[in-house]
Each structure stands twice: as structure tokens, then as C-alpha cells.
Length: 263
Ligand code: ADP
Ligand code: MG
Image (spheres, rainbow, N blue to C red):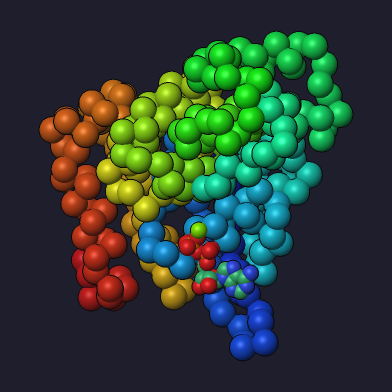
């Protein structure tokens, strides 16, 4: 087994507001191996975005730590994380190329070889021809691809993807699932994907973590067998075994009871 790229250890988070305190995450622990693709599914409000923001170092958790064993760095200090959100957040007044170079500019390192890398990524994602256009001139799928290039441009080791496909139509979504998986495998990236879509989680992942809410906890963990895991997301949906995995997760999400009384 390969070493873990990161370890989430006992993360608990309480949001405090004028209406009181609410426990958003309760003692979340898991590890992700280098090169692994893990999905996080769970009902709205179970704390998925909170967890990703903690992992990205944007929120300091009430308790617990996120450890990156290789570098020993805390998430806030690490430039090795790429965080991609549901909305693409491209700047409308910048061309696609200038948008994807932005992450590098912010880090003050638009060296020539980085530019080459960005152009290569744009090519791999079929955006080279539109690099001089503005975001409003592109389809939703193209904009999400551009946002992905921007995220990958800084060469993060870990990608945190928060429902990146949810605004897209089904066809575009399937195409993008496949493209992203190819790119991540080619460049050997580690990724954590948040999604509402059970089929997407099973089709894309090596492992799926199922969360429950009130408070946010990991309720179930499922390893995707090779027959499903090693084929493309579209083919995965056609394999034997896919539907039983789908239903295993479905049952976990459907059942409002917590683990008590269950075997
Ligand atoms: P998810 O991404 O799974 O839908 P979130 O992480 O966005 O869940 O939210 C988890 C819980 O924390 C929800 O009950 C939400 O209302 C609450 N919450 C999220 N952000 C804040 C905030 N900034 N202040 C107070 N409560 C918040
Ligand atoms: Mg969310």
C-alpha cells in the first residue's frame, strides 16, 4: 500500500453565530493515499464544503488536524493544494489564457516553462483554440475546463473538487468526468471530489466516503473494485457490480437512522 498523501485526524468543527453554536463536523478521520481518487457524498448540509475548506486551510477547525506526511506542512502553508469550486470564478474581463495564468501570477512565477505547461494543459483539455476568448464566449463545460486548467497550473499534488460538475448538463458532465480522470491519472494527482451524484462517485473513484448530517460524520466507506475502478466513468456505469455499489450508497443515504441498531 502506498503512503498516505494526507491524513485527516479527528476534525470537529463548530460554527458559532448569534443564533447559537452548531456542530457541523464531528470527529472526522480518514487518510488518502498518494494518487488515490476519493469521493465524498452526503446530503446537503452535512459539512462537505466545510471539510474541504478546512483541508485547504481556509477554515481553522475547532479541533483536529490535517497532516501531509510527506512535507509535514499544515494545509494553510501548503501551495500544493488546488481547490476547485462549483462556480468557475473566471474573471469576465480576462481572456481564458489570462485567467488560467492567474494562479501562477499570484505566486509570482509565470516563468516560461510554466507558460508551456499551461498551454499543454489547455491543449489536453481542448481549449487551445479558445485561449484568447473571454469566459462569456464559452459554454459552461468549457468554462469548467478552464477553471480546472487554472487549478492544475500551479501543479498542486492534491485536488479538492467541490461539486465541479453540478451546473453542467448530463452529457457534458460525463465527458468532463472522463477527461478529468484521464488528466489526473496522467499527472498522478491525488483528488477528493465532493458530489451529490452517487453514480458519479462510484464511476470515478477508488473509494467513496458517505457522510450523514446533524452532526456531519462519516457513516460508511466503500472501496470500488478494480472491474469498475479501472475503466472509464462511462464504461464503469455499464459494468456488473456497478448497481450494487450504487444501491449500497443509496441505502446509506436514504436511511435517516444513525448507526444504532444496525449491524
Ligand atoms: P455541505 O457542503 O455538505 O452542503 P456545508 O459545509 O456547507 O455543507 O455546511 C454544513 C453545516 O454548517 C450546515 O448546517 C450549514 O448551514 C452550516 N454552515 C456552513 N457555513 C456556515 C457559516 N459560515 N456559519 C454558520 N454555519 C455555517
Ligand atoms: Mg457544499
